[in-house]
Length: 341
Length: 251
Image 1 (tube, chains in turn orange, blue):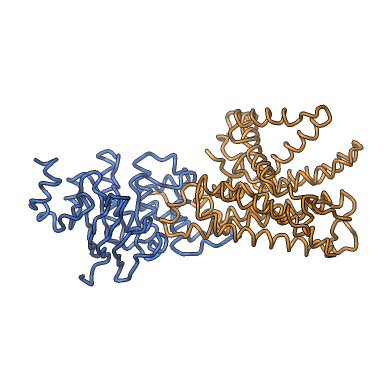
Image 2 (image 1 turned 180 degrees about the vertical axis):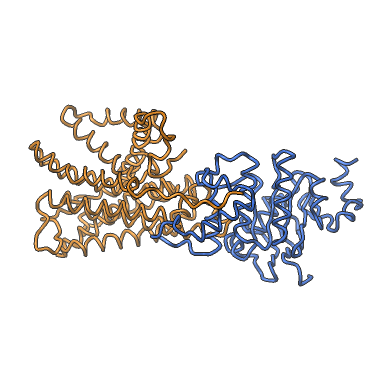
């Protein structure tokens, strides 16, 4: 009999490579834009990353935990409104706003999760959707939340360094840092023992119970963590746009986040980012030529879903696998995590 | 009730509308024994196992495990006490490796899965223990294969490995040999005997040769009711059993 083989570790360099590459792209992107005299797109870049973060947080429970939440915009919106209200009340410290948004979204998810996570499958999809729509109508009807007109901000929050993040570039650095830190955090979570339970839940949650784990508890923690990250994205979003309206809570927004996840490739850590960049990029480009951009985006989505079930990440994995010369090791380890079968 | 039984079911009932799936079942399993539960198709064997494991709550009746009332405990709480089931239809964590499957069951038993930061793969003690269990069940060479790539028989074995890793005191084995060939059955029988060294077993099995070879005691379930309980010899000769069940095959 073979002696117990140690669990293979990834070489540090290979593990870090995608991260270094992504950060390099993120850091150089605004300079490229400025060089091409298109600095005004930096704000769009921030928006892509922010919505990408929200989509990644959805993927954390959807792609890894198998929890198809169709009300994720509720937590994005809760975070956005928390920060907007705080800033309206004169709190302009970014850390306070971000912290409060994370706390409110997390708390909300804890309550909603306590109820909705007792259901499964289609019922879970419906109940999360129902809660999100309740939030939408609630915010829409309360005057002090701005009603259907939303809340405008005079300026962005400050980092306590004496400077408002007035310039889009400064704000972009904050967004880039936050998104990278969040992705790193999710990566750690997914590789931990907690992450192992989360993955198992996706395969078979009853079986998880039958080896002695309280599945509900783990789902609730994952659901809450995911909402906290969505709340963080919400706090950034309201500062990026200097505006928040009830539409951020609408089910269309939840659907949009889900489309980003599917487009990027369910169950890949960074899929939300790629999905957001593609979707928003496509919309922006098409808007220059036609007022019927959504029509073409629809066809694009359809073809991605039909041609590559694992989204753009799957396409990327395939492409890099075929580029790699045949005699090499079997092309198995391209994507950082397993994709859904 | 004899105090020494590890599992005592008393008057368990499960209704589905008008159908009495489990009809006032009382059952005792003793430590270190292999107790077989036999009965024709549709007798309610799996329903009973599902009730005993806690996946399904009983409509009435009581269940004691090691003398403690466990009637209202959930499945994962019963597993923590040592009452563990395995499944007739293999239910593994298919997108995870064999090693991760076992390691998950081990970390569940240790009760410290709420570890968020440290990579799970760096817990050498846990992984070594998981690897030891894989060696034990003869799947050491498969440690980094995904569970879904295993053959049917290997999946059945890993299924038993999952139960083993939770360090059970009593295992409810629901047709562990379902769908396996003769050679593989031998492997599984050996594994059941190995499990029996440390745990009592309630075995559901259709193959009578296997049942009479392994079981110390038997209970016969027909239409949701236990019609006889006893040693293999006494069951073989029980006229009610012969008429209701064995007669069909052994006449």
